[in-house]
Length: 108
Image (tube, rainbow, N blue to C red):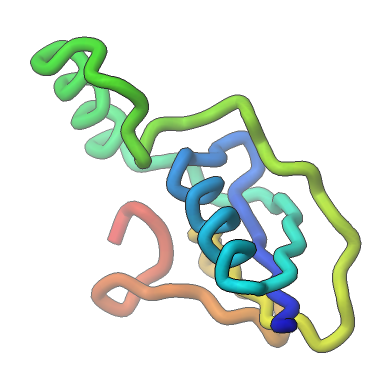
């Protein structure tokens, strides 16, 4: 069983984070979660979300929407693969962070 640790942005958990956790667990992974401070979502992204809501109305919960159903933080396992999804410029030692056009976070 693969141990995975996800670092999620504090106060900015999105539905896609929860879907990722569920998919990793369904694939047999043992997923631990922690939150850490990260940059605020860029203004352009927040405005796009507002415009979509106005244009399309209540069309169900999108994967990019914020959620109050934040996952419970769990203790770290030794040897876990750590993925930093906070979008912060500095990544903790040993963690992997996805880059978009060479930069972390939603602003990229």
